[in-house]
Amino acid sequence: MKEVVQRTKHETLDFQDDRASYRDLLSSLVNQTSSLVKGEIALAKAELRDKLRTYLSAASVTGLGIVFGLISVMSLAAAAIVALAPKVGSALACVLVGGVFGVVAVLLATYGLKQLER
Image (cartoon, rainbow, N blue to C red):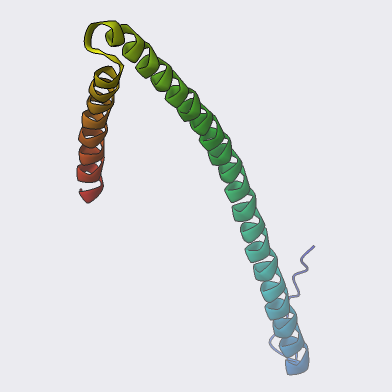
């Protein structure tokens, strides 16, 4: 609660009280500023923690999706080899399927590296 003190022309000013009140005001300003900065830092930390949780969760699900995708690709490769083996032989079927996957891998890696250069 603020109190307003009115002074008359004839009243003498007490500079000690003014200095004390300036000190109190400055002290209050420093304390409030410190509290504000600490609060902002705490808020930033909480926001970063929330974002980190979100990103870690997304990364975990993405990693799991990649693992299942690799298992799927390996199964398809095995199926393609089994399907080609009676027609061209087991060894040639493995080379053909491996070669196709190798070409796709090189194309994807090249495309990814070009994207990183931008």
